[in-house]
Image (tube, rainbow, N blue to C red; front, side, top):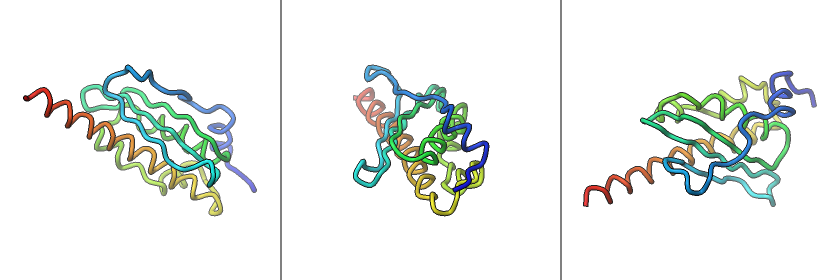
Length: 133
């Protein structure tokens, strides 16, 4: 299978690998996929003033999974929460030239990003509710 140079760059030199400290505030976290199915992505966002200040990931899977997660961290950083939620599998497929047989990687990463955003929004709502008591 032939991969684009851009995708190979994100695979061989992934950006923003890791996780935020468990004590870090304003972090949205997600974990999608399963080892049984061959791919897992942990995606985290750090939010300051409704903008994503940083994003990190850890992934187990094939090259397109790792490349898509790496690219996604760079794509969402510095975007408002609402704008980051517009990331789609189609965008990942186009930007990285992911082959048709590997589009599940883009779908997995899209889910990971959107679930991390949802987790942050849920936590923010809980904090707001508790602080207003």
